Image (tube, rainbow, N blue to C red):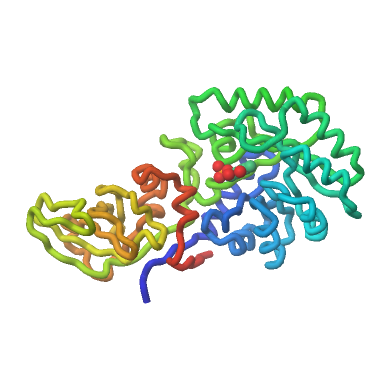
Length: 355
Ligand SMILES: Cc1ncc(COP(=O)(O)O)c(C=O)c1O
């Protein structure tokens, strides 16, 4: 059997969730949209059986969780796309983000028999979705007055919380606080970089995504992020070895040319598994728990690594593409990507769960 696998450590997931909850100072939603950033939404939700709630992008993702028997609160981060989703939201007891006036109107006009849980999203400066700060108080009052809403949580999302020296998060925070001044409601501000790096924005509800999966959102080392445990180990094996003299090209386009006598290991892992094709020569790869480097262009099903300094490595040696010996964030930054995207791209290599 092809040895490529993504091993998912559910104990590490639980550890990271506990850290998110501890930091949020209240409760934390586990953000498991996009199939839990590629880690498998249903299994991750089952593993987080004591989570305060989950967040997904859309109703399709929420219904998959409900069908699997997940009973905790589930928030739709993009809200509903058309008013006809409201009866389903009610039926499955989902919470929904409201980010636009038309959604408030749709709620006012809906015929519902149980109160909706709404998270009113305010655009404090990310300028993606969210109601204008000046309209927030009015829309909040309309939602409460509609007779169709039980609770409104006030939320916003930060655009640059991963940049710890950037003043934008503080500015967004001020805009948010001004917009909600005088409103008595629970509040949700912090994503992973907010929870890890901005103590002043931690409050009632954290919304932890990437930190759950054990990857740092920051580009520089960060003491709090050091406490995270990697959840995914993308692994495979060496399936062939060859010795090349100086001056030989390796792989497509001959991107890498041997500068010394080189032992080349071929790994069953390629861009069809989600390993980034743009990873340059020198990207770290661990073979038998020792770090070495990628050499040559990544192809669809295989990639090549330098075994010259690992004389004991050979066919059958274990390879970690990312995990705890090589961090996904290292690979991501070299491949002009982010761990979020690397994880989401993992496919074909089966997900294998460990408790
Ligand atoms: C509204 C919202 N909150 C929280 C998150 C989680 O962010 P992170 O993965 O950086 O923790 C996301 C993810 O994109 C989001 O869109």
